[in-house]
Image (cartoon, rainbow, N blue to C red):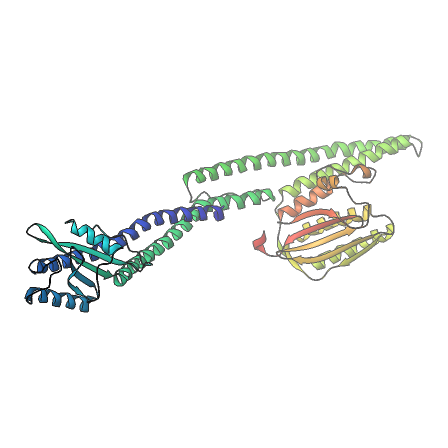
Length: 468
């Protein structure tokens, strides 16, 4: 969930910072240009004031005597150009030159300079030039009219390079970008803290749910931190878990009590059957059938009691040599397998894991018993111990009839037995007991097809306490 929520928050915050940064960048560029334009307007106004007093014939007639004011104006323009590198000129209405710097600069027939010149002839200062951006190599054109006795007699035009202005704009943008980057880092840090604060109760709830689902019913959610809604959810979850545990405890108690209470009457019944058998002819089929069913019922009651105890008992986890334990079980079951004509082999290297040795032994006994029981004469049962990441596994495979896909989905359910094996001795509770015992210690049991035929059962236990 965090991988989906965090990018969304980052995108939203980036959009907000971009929405704030773009207008600010445009404002910085406009302010820098406006500062230059104001300076050029002041300069053109000063040159226009000097040009007001220059006497010259705009019609193109030659000057008959040197004009000291015009010479002063020329010196001012030359000095201005030399110092600032800004082209400047004072032009009559017909475009002829009153004074200019450099000497070869004139008003072109078209272009931005001509437009500004035309605006000034109408007694209007030129409009604000178009915005110059750092990636453009444009120049700023500013024109002011020279007015004498209410008439426009000439125009002062400046043509400014924009390199320094564009550099200042770029530095301003870099400063804004650095601020945006720093703000983005702070926003990402805040988003990480926020999502961590919001999702931490969800992660705890998910972990606790997994614990309960795997049999650790005592697990509860610590109601601390996070939004109020998630704290209420945690409390409600704990209440639900308490109620479920109570119901399951009542169910276990009922099964255990019922199994215990039924054993005494059943024992008495079996004893009366044995006494009755003494009064009947030896080999009576009916009494033999009753005796068999009575013993089967006694086995079911014993298995029910074992299942109730298995679901209630806590595992005594210790560092256990799974390979050595599996080797012991192979040795213990070898006579039984040999008596049936089944080959029992084991590959049990020394591999450790955290497990209850008694529980693991019982689980392996149940699995090996089933494998030997359903493997026909001449078949093979193989036990392989291995490590797989955070778990140690004991894989038991046989060459028996195996199970169908539908039967694989049900194997391990209480009282379930394949319809093809109803005549085989058993109560259908052995694998259920095994699963409950393993789950109490963080282990598991899974079933799969074994090629070319048979069943593969994998018993897994955690290799370290953190995997519990």
